Image (cartoon, helix red, strand yellow):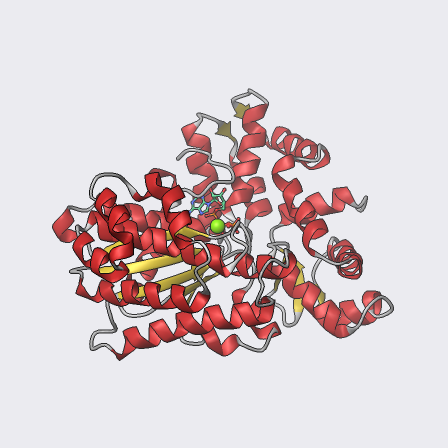
Amino acid sequence: MENITGNPVTYKNYLQTRLFLVDDLRSYVRKTSVIIEAPRRFGKTSVIKEFIRQEEEKEDQDQEFHVLFLELEGEETIDAFCFKLFKELLSLYQCRRHLEWIRELLGDAWNVIASRLSKVKVSELEIELHEKTRGTDFPLWKERLRSMIIGLNSFDKKTVIVFDEFPDMLLNFKNKNEESLGFKDAADKLTGWLRSLRQEAEADNDGGKYQFVFCGSVNLRKTLEDIGISKRINDLEPLVVPPLNCEDATVLVKSLSDNYELEIEQDGIQFMVSKIIDGSPYYGQILIKALRDTREKVFHLVKVQAVYDAMLRGGNHDIQHFHSRLNDYLSPVERECSAIILKHLCCGGIPEKQLFDTYVYERCSYEVFQSVVNRLIYEGYITRDTESQGEIKFVSTLLKDWWACKVGVR
Ligand SMILES: Nc1ncnc2c1ncn2[C@@H]1O[C@H](COP(=O)(O)OP(=O)(O)OP(=O)(O)O)[C@@H](O)[C@H]1O
Ligand SMILES: [Mg+2]
């Protein structure tokens, strides 16, 4: 198992104890659309990529799904979203040799492009496609895309359309202010339209031939709730990517260290597991990376502890991005509130209400405090402790120790 820090993993690099997530996703998309819910860096994209890999590995006659994967993080307008979806659908129709149907659908004005599609890939026609679709408004996009999506019903296999980083795109509508409809209106229209497409699929006897998978590092439910349209996604089946449990963490540390022939003493392994448990596999990866960076092969507990400490104090850039996102996405008041919350959680979990009443109430309203808590949860910083009622705490001890070093508590 290779140590791939920061990028989605598949196949032999996918933690074996978590393959059940891929099986769950597969059985859900046989009958319904799905929302993959988890904080940042928990492994949402990896579940999808491994699902795609397993599907592609099969012989053609055994494959159940075509999967279209749309990465939406950088998209800032509905038009850009529609264009991307259009391109992906076109590619699917192209490789399933349904070009004649596409030619009919698009009409005579598209003849030149349609004939070129029989020879070159869609990606090579990007400029022409942009030219041709320039100025297309949302009603026209909807009409065109709907025909293509409904047309998937005629394929032998089901199609799964994955929208990765979907909520980030919605927030881009808001932050970059480039959506002419206005954020709320744009999010409402887009999610409403996607909902109606799912309803059309449901109306079909066997649930239709296409399903959507929504996934993203900020909470889609919360984003839509805030603007009063959460009902737009209440038909989606949630797939929750859980934090690492003890077995996951142990297998991760052992598989990664074996791969690089690192000999870590048993109590060193236990120490590492205790630091990354309840967090994401990412923390295990950065810890292994820190050990490898020493160029040594044998690690006693004291050595592991020393490397761990140096990693935290050295401003490790693999963790640093957690902080930069807070600076980018929170308002000054929210940032101040988040700093207070995180500082006090460095000493251990605290019940949410007590945290507000004791440390935060003078700085902001309870509403703002709650929105910051929710944001920190979805940024992957903190979690609501299911063991002790009402407490919030850092996600994994590693992140807590890192923050404690940062603010001088450790
Ligand atoms: N099953 C797994 N086995 C091993 N490592 C994993 C697994 N899932 C995720 N990781 C690691 O965790 C990190 C995050 O993975 P991934 O990008 O899939 O998560 P994500 O939830 O999509 O993240 P983001 O919120 O940044 O989009 C990566 O470094 C990845 O290599
Ligand atoms: Mg991702």
